[in-house]
Image 1 (cartoon, rainbow, N blue to C red):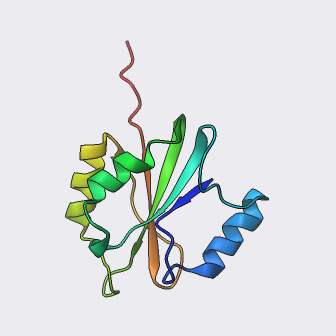
Image 2 (image 1 turned 45 degrees about the vertical axis):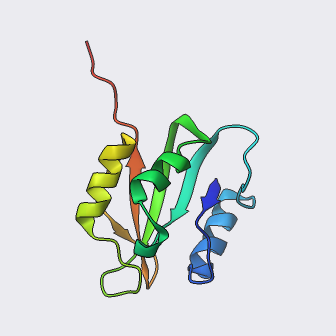
Amino acid sequence: MQELGWDSDVDEELRDGLIEAVGDDFVYEAVEAVDVVLLWWRAEDGDLGDGLVDALTDLGSRGYIWLLTPKVGRSGYVDPTDLSEAALTAGLALANPASVAPDWQAHKLVRPKGSRR
């Protein structure tokens, strides 16, 4: 699991739980494709579409992104419209959010499945 966007405001308890579940520390500079990218993102971090495209760099073809954004009313909150537009720009499908920490929600982003013939 690769982690991007870490800063002092992230939920350390959530990070520790993920590291424990994975059984290894996060990857910061991937030497091979990763299965999951954990991307912490705040409104002030810039263009989310660009951030998602950058997150795809080390992601394997069957991998997915867990995008963590501040919840409504928290500093750095990202509007759902911006999330949808950024996912579309990056060529990803966006799932419904899940509350994962007191101040953070997670959005799973995947590559759309190809059409069947």
